[in-house]
Image 1 (cartoon, rainbow, N blue to C red):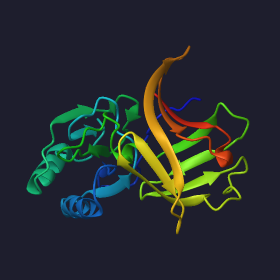
Image 2: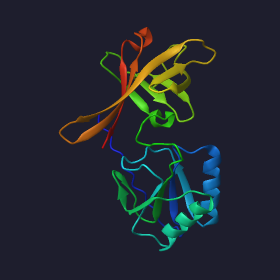
Image 3: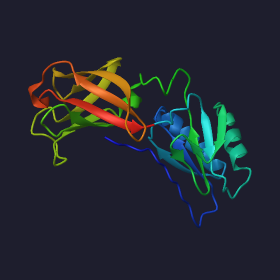
Image 4: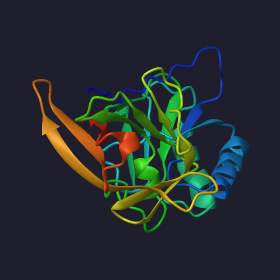
Length: 227
């Protein structure tokens, strides 16, 4: 499995600098407040749910060297200070495998008590996982808002009552999938590991079923990000 997080952000014909807001750990209320402050400071805001670069542990800002407004970085820092967000680190052009080109700024905000690299928060596990070590071709989609889908090789929900529902991590490292109006669900143990191949290192997040569920045919599920 080979995943490469590569973000290339291009703008043309627009005088406003775009701020790409990484909102993975932010509440809807926080996103709304931050968006309002940046728009009032004359920025265009684009919100994403991307995972944070591996080196990010505190609120940080990465910017393009080609910015129309040379004071844009300071304006973002001041705007965030107005609503009690301190930016601890700034860098130009790229952070790890995240690249920022043209007239753009990446704003990665880390709320108090959150450790982006600890992989213990529910948001960290919202990804698409593919089946391993079994004959079935299945994927589990864990969505940011807490919904899940189990899909077959044709990318359609499997023919089962538990194909869709809610997921949560009440106590790390255990994850539960529970269908609507059901008193029973699938339970998984969560784990992380780093594997090395001929290209480099890959960070793997694994969902291992805690029982031999017939529907899942003994599969484990993996999501990989190349470091």
